[in-house]
Image 1 (tube, one colour):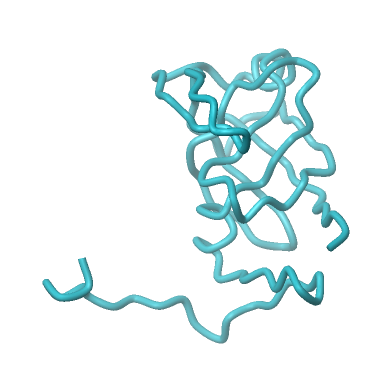
Image 2 (tube, helix red, strand yellow):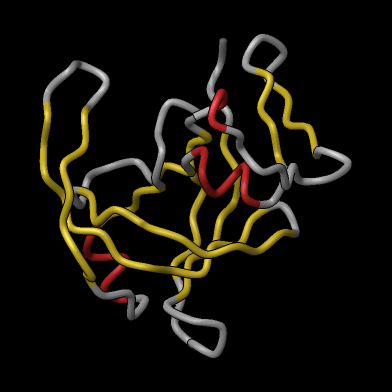
Amino acid sequence: MGLMHVTTTLRASEKARKKYQADFLVDTGATDSMAPTTQLKQAGIRPRGRTAYELANGQTVEYDFGLAEIEFMGEITSGRVIFGPDNAEPILGVIALESVGILVDPANRTRKRMPAIPLKQLGPERL
């Protein structure tokens, strides 16, 4: 499968004038989104916490994360953004994608909008 990229804009808040815009790699294996630390700080996005993440190679690393408004494909959401290394390729994670109702079909390299975002209560058997 080839790589899929989406133009994405990050802002600290709705009214923020500063922003970071780039082509983000769509990565359904990543939970949170990630961008280079320097770019996030220039956009006014500040670290709010730190957590451990497992890399594709199985290594566990800790990264700072912030909260940002995330805009892509004509949709807008907000969520965690990891402060990655300055040479890191920006990543659009699955939480951002699913929160606006976009599914990725890796076999066909396509994105699909769901007709409605699921809003179902999980029963004990589904936890």
